[in-house]
Amino acid sequence: GQNIDQPTEMTATEGAIVQINCTYQTSGFNGLFWYQQHAGEAPTFLSYNVLDGLEEKGRFSSFLSRSKGYSYLLLKELQMKDSASYLCAVREGTGFQKLVFGTGTRLLVSP
Amino acid sequence: DTAVSQTPKYLVTQMGNDKSIKCEQNLGHDTMYWYKQDSKKFLKIMFSYNNKELIINETVPNRFSPKSPDKAHLNLHINSLELGDSAVYFCASSQASRGKQTQYFGPGTRLLVL
Image (cartoon, rainbow over all chains, first blue to last red; front, side):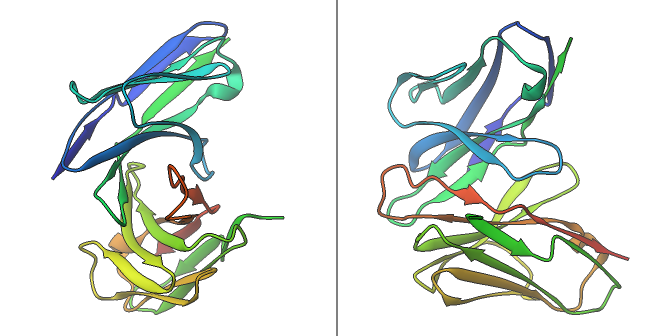
């Protein structure tokens, strides 16, 4: 089975740094994705981790600890356009794999 | 130059009707998916096809029948629509043999059953 937990909602101020956590319990772990979804739009790919450590991509970084079943997405220099839902998704299985999504964290960035 | 496209974007229909949603991708991917996102924004896999073969079939009522005429297209037919089918349905695609196999999503079809 799988269980993926994220905070439901977070608020932050423009220019600040925010960390969105994701914890998971799953069988056959094969990577973790973060997606961004603006209201009324499709999820778009942000980052991918399969090995422990930090992956940095511009203002966004993602961290993974497989032994702890834990990941976080770090957003720096927040902008108003970063207001969106952030979805943590675990890839399971071998061969043909599937993505199991968390419930998402709604981030509101205020001026 | 749309990567993953879906039609229609909005679908409003009566309970008991039958409807279809279509999806096409021009990314050259070999795997396509249908997801359902409910009112609480929870995104859940329904089906997946690889090279026209069904590879993932989650616990979905058999009123839902996917069909993949070729690896660039994946359609979803829903019979006897129910109120609980109201949701946003997203199509996605990926390349099974390519690295992290990132899934790319279509714009979604907003289905409202009255």
